[in-house]
Image (tube, rainbow, N blue to C red):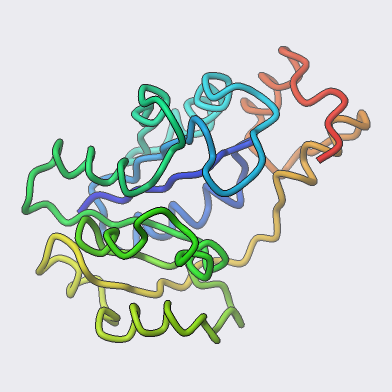
Length: 213
């Protein structure tokens, strides 16, 4: 099984990395592919370029077996829609390989606002990273979509290439990329919120100076 974790990664931090590692281990995934978006479809434009964000991702995961940086959204024009990314991955891995789209619970709740969101279930499983105390309610459309697809074990995901929804408990880490950017903009240290190699590169390039969000 292949895990897919998309996002702006503006910048990548331990709140991305630790839950991804737990999902990698718990589901016995062959790999987790970190896919920075080029042009976010549902949030403000990142403060640094997609190429810079990808470089920081590569620094963050260089020593972790099973973590892979994937630049496919940087190579595609237009907004970075996940349905297009999954279609591209499906073309690479074939019809039989289980693909697992890894989402935080907040992103999962917002799924009905995504482009062609119902098609995601035809292309991949959805693994929702569930933090302690983070439970429904969900919007009615999402509840209707989720109910017939919900599974309760990773083994169920292995039996099909797509279509399941699994809630996977992960460690609760309240780390915000926004907070990291503001600390950097004010000359304060975000150390221990993100990998040292990432922080060193941010400082070397003077990224996020003057950030207000």
